[in-house]
Amino acid sequence: MCLGIPGRIVSIDDAENRLATVDVGGVRRQINIACIVDAEHPPEACVGDWVLVHVGFAMSRIDEAQAAETLRILAELGEAESEIEAMRMTAAS
Amino acid sequence: MKYVDEFRDREKAEALIREINTVVAGIDLARHRPINIMEVCGGHTHSIFRYGLEGMLPKEIELIHGPGCPVCVLPMGRVDDCVAIAERPEVIFTTFGDAMRVPGSKKSLMQAKAAGADVRMVYSPMDALALARKNPGREVVFFALGFETTMPSTALTVLQAEAEGVRNFSLFCNHITIVPTIKAILDSPDLQLDGFLGPGHVSMVTGTAPYQFIARHYRRPLVVAGFEPLDILQSIWMVLKQIRDGRAEVENQYARIVSDAGNAAALAAVGRVYELREFFEWRGLGSIDHSGVRLRAAYAHFDAEKRFAIPNVTIADPSSCQCGEVLKGVIKPWQCKMFGGACNPETPLGALMVSSEGACAAHYQYGGVQRRMGVA
Ligand code: SF4
Image 1 (cartoon, each protein chain N blue to C red):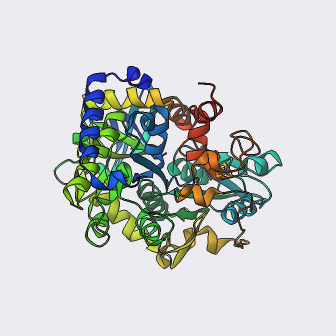
Image 2: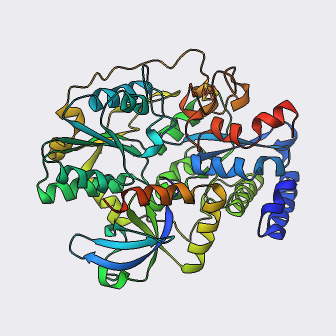
């Protein structure tokens, strides 16, 4: 829960409530993007962004190369799988 | 240096180790006693053990594994409170998976679930709110746990529940904050710390300003560090250079994620929903002033502590456990008499053996036991 995992925002579901769909290693689920939007970067501008996702909330924007490197490290640490599994568990609910 | 083979950037790692050796050779203090550097965050502890970083560093450097794993410092009494709430028939108790196995004085949440309590693992506090919407006849309680990294997520979930008028949702708030705890450790006479690796993702939210007192008042260097092995080596090198040069500053190695100002939207949500508690109890460390937060009065109707009668008793850690001494870095995990015997990841006695970010579990998992027994 503390390390987070990188994902890519694929669509905005509800701009007013700051809800978007993110793709994390092929698993899609809804996340909250309130912490990465502001006047200069409104929700509509977030599609395609790579973000670091902590417990269902995008906490930071990152670049693509960095996202790939972070995923590689998390996989080595054995964290990526459990994180994606936890996401998958509740993705459908 | 067998672990270095695993690095993609082997040359960089080796170059950093050479640099570290050079800097250490220029530090007078290192001739008299080890240089003690505390990594505050459990994510760092995990990386350090996973990549065997301690074994690569010169022997003059001692890494002290700090209290920055929220699962590891959760006191038994709070686990008992969780179980008491979870056992109420109207309650659906939701939690991150990490907390399921932390021992309480009688049972863990996992054991409570096996005995019939409706305990459900969720990935996000938003999932708990969704459960509340779906089950209007039940009380859905979310076990809010973690440092500033996860605080914004629960704060925003409460704000969302308020906006929607969801009334059968509440938080059992156990969020903690690391800065008062670093201060308590610096004030404790047990240990001489020479520098810190600052937590990466807590700082992503808070920014670097909260650490300034460590540099200014305590005159200790702190470098906010990323989680990759090279990040950690580079950060150690930066701390050592400060020690060599007689500087005490807050530096940021993890600038690709952490800005000095932190995350304004996240901090605003946290400030709206939470206020500091007078004190909070930490497993192994005891009560620390202003080290936890609770819901503000305006959100009291989302506060599980107000909605349900909870036992709220302080339970002393079992006397055989030495978790507190490990947390403060006074002893190494394997020096605890219970380590690897009565206390192991299958049947943890202390919380440091539960989470993979706990020093004892990390040490157990990545060769600590074999190394000590001469197997590897
Ligand atoms: S070995 Fe177990 S009891 Fe001893 S310090 Fe570690 S977690 Fe605590």
